[in-house]
Image (cartoon, rainbow, N blue to C red; front, side):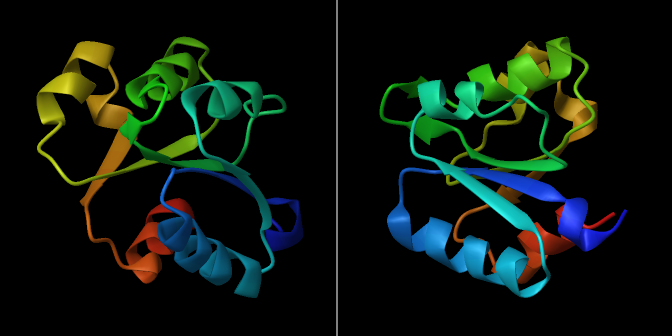
Amino acid sequence: MDAAKRRVLIVDDDLNTCKVIRAIFRRNGWQIITARTVAEGLASLGPPPTCAVIDLMLPDGPGERIVRAIVQGDLPTCVVVCTGVDDAQRLRDVGAFDRVTVLRKPVKAEAVFAACDT
């Protein structure tokens, strides 16, 4: 897919994390959508982004609600979860373990981009 048509949704309440991840996608020509809460992330799923980079610990609830919406809605969105804790069981409970790349924080922006740029 042409990079100009690719859209990444970054859902993280840490502004520094968003800034670093946003920079690598911008350099590669992707359109960028950012959200700081679960509510904003859910509202940003239409039209579905090419990739969603999601933190699981958000101020208004668990980020796996966004993962669940992507999986249960069968959206054509690659999901990358960035987390500081072991959330494998939480993702299994969502039914998303097969569709999700999990990266432990602190993450390298290059690793996030590589997981999305498939």
